[in-house]
Length: 299
Ligand code: AMP
Image (tube, rainbow, N blue to C red):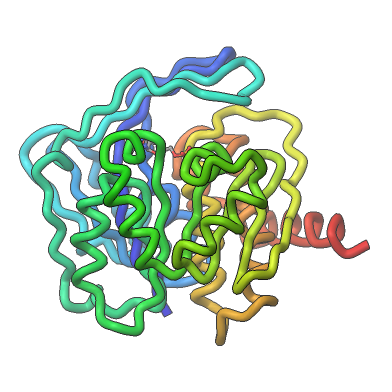
């Protein structure tokens, strides 16, 4: 069972109150694939420029990620720069350069068209739509988005929301999309728009899910030293969907378990820079954090 992932494959420049890292590896699809690879096979779709290091893809392949759906084009890779507030409670985007993503039109290899789950990760909604139209019927579809795409092409984002079965967004986006002022009420409202499963991520606080009308909440794993929250949401999504793809059926138990796995993996991401850390996370660390969170819920 595999998870197809499309999204940005990027260089990031990150500024926190403690450090500044220039042009490190990032991108929604890198974080999501690295996280999903701990649970299922992954098929990665995207594009990079001639400036992107090949050894990153070799690392992904060594963890069972199929990278044959990644194109390499002449030009620059996607670039994003962000600055975090000292308490990591908010961040500001300083720069987004689409680079080779600007003229990209993904064509899925034949072997990519019927994954167990297709994740339309964070990238322009027209690219998400192009991938959606190439999937075989029966594929479970999931999507994420970001404030930039809601600002640029809100209508298309909402058209996609109507078509997918699983929606994962963060609390800010969920409230922006619904005009609700609580993550759970926003999740409930989004669930009336089409998706069978809506997950609203709340950073270090955890995440809520509404599955076929029923709500569930899982708290975050307590992290004492945040280094860089970049990619936490994407890694959450990768772990959530990878875990679901490994289940025999997507029922309430499987969804709630996936939510705990999402929180467990995301907590590790914020303690490190770059997606390589997610890829190298051990099974033992994932399980320890999973059990810790489960015990918080299972009084
Ligand atoms: P997250 O912290 O989970 O929201 O993900 C941040 C990652 O998404 C960074 O590594 C960026 O390269 C990437 N990113 C930032 N802005 C965008 C955007 N507008 N579209 C796609 N990816 C983005």
